Length: 151
Image (spheres, rainbow, N blue to C red):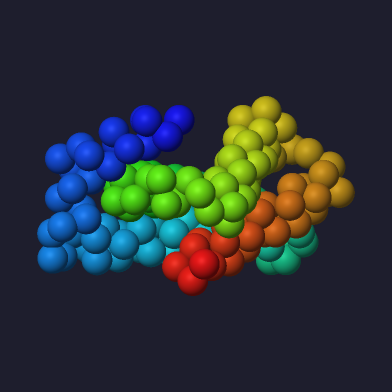
């Protein structure tokens, strides 16, 4: 694994990110934008699942917010991979980074399970559970992401 991480750090893209004056800052800004879109769309969906906003259906809310969440996720993943390339061995050695990846994996699995396997016509208690789990996981992703900069 270490050899692969070192090889990744030596790629031209990784070196450009590391040594360019603006590349890391621009990519980091895109990462924050992607996360803002993702979490900004996920939180209202989760709050609806938990029981807020009874005047609108989950399907109506999802019709608007799921494309925003998916777009944010794509931006965050692409920019996150690029940021990781700037120091793969350093990031991989951080337990908080690995925790963030684990939370992302569970949060995505939770969303995919709800949207494509369970659908929207599920009992309210299951929707509440999915909403609470999603909120907790995405908040853990946010906190872990911020901690990465300080550990």
